Amino acid sequence: MTSPASSSEVKYLIESSEGNTFDVSGAALRQSNTFNAMFLNIGADGPIPFTDYNEATLKKVFEYCEHSVNEENYSGPKHQDDLSKWDLNFFNEMDQKMFIDVINASNFLDIERLTSYCCERIARMLRGKNTQEMIKVITLPTAEELEAKQKVEEKKAAAAKKVAEKAAETAEKTETLEELPVQQLVQTTRNKLTRKYLSFSNE
Amino acid sequence: MSSPFPILRLPRLVQCEIFKLLNIEEKIKLSFCSKKIFTQIHNYRLYSQKVIVDLDCFKQEIEIQSENNQDLFKVGIHPDSRISHSSTIQQISIASCTVRAEYLQIGMKTFWNNCLEGFLSIIHHLLKIFQCKMSTSLICYRSDLFQPTISMLFDLQLEFKGLYIRLEGSRDKNLWWNKISNNLGLVEYLSISSSLDRAFIPVFISWPQKIRILDSDWFTLETLLSCTCSKIMLEESLLENKDFDVVLRKWKTGGFPNLKLLWLDSPNITDNGEQILGMNLNELDRKVIQNADGSKTATIDLGKHWIEMSVTSSE
Image (cartoon, rainbow over all chains, first blue to last red):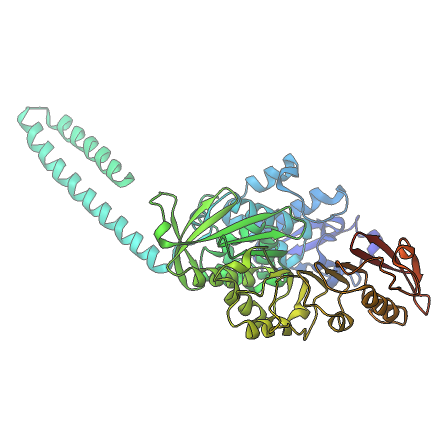
């Protein structure tokens, strides 16, 4: 059992969706209003189960909380331009999937400062854009659109493969006539084919 | 993070926080992105900033501004015929219509087949994404859009920060006035500019908070005595010294409980010997009078053919 006064010195065990556990300081954990409402006064006997979120996400969220332990009390949203270098690095090193996981976890844990910075970061994606540009930023392709896109890509790849095969045949015929040593001829054709196929696939 | 960001898949609270961070322009532009986004913004309308929607029916322009006037966006409504073949024209969706639009530095132009439909559609759209108070510009009443627009807004029971009307020349004057008069409780400041023929004398069924009437020769003492406004400005009135005497006596005995300012401009306010509260007109200048229970004082100021009474609470 942990008392609120001593919670900053105490470490809590957090359990992730994988069943893994790791330590978080009481001071960091207290930034979560969800934790405060659920465990701060009654304490926790075993690991605190935040099993809707994976270990990587929870560690990222609590990394933020540990870092902001010594910052002054949160007093509402801060403009992105006012973020520290550490904050910016923290956000910049996340890919989109991790960023979304962090927002979801931060929202569940009700960590106001982190949620607010995440929201500001998303709002910033929309700033200075017109409607068409905003659509590009926020609209995910539908399942039909994804399927159609995949079909087009498959067709392109098949066409590229056909062209490559035809080119290989032609090259084989031409280079045979030039009386190259057989070994060299095969290698040259292979190299050409690989280059061509790769260039088609990358288009 | 270059791939599209799934804003609508975020938790609702997070979406709400993001919308709260957007300024007027950003929120309007975002609301045109898709029906789903629009619906979500609408769902969080009560957490949105409060805006004043100023309708300029004459210029066919709607100005949306924050209450502190620091944030502003204008939407112009233009006929399709005036569309330019600019590459910046884009299609947006407003109230189930697909409309062509062009963004400008602090606003946008929208192009419509029918400008009245466009005007009303834009207003409907704004009402769904912001907490709006309406306002009309001074020369608005000259436009054909004015009456149908104001009627619709009254039907929706929307509040007006300012409403400027002119009764002469309006269609179905009686019906129109009835519509207005029934809804003046929704209006903060009403300005009426009218010289009326004697056959039509408007009757107030409800009152705005503040009223200013230019050419108020039709505004009688009886009407003034029933007025519940906190600020009353009557220009070109025909009221006389004796009428002002009645007003002051009523106020002294607890009448006009909301009154903060009465400004009366009339050629009949003269030093002609007609007394007000037992005093000649010029004796009244700078006079401070108190009501019967001592809870309020009124200061009287005089000018050439005008008289002003400003009220303060004694506590």
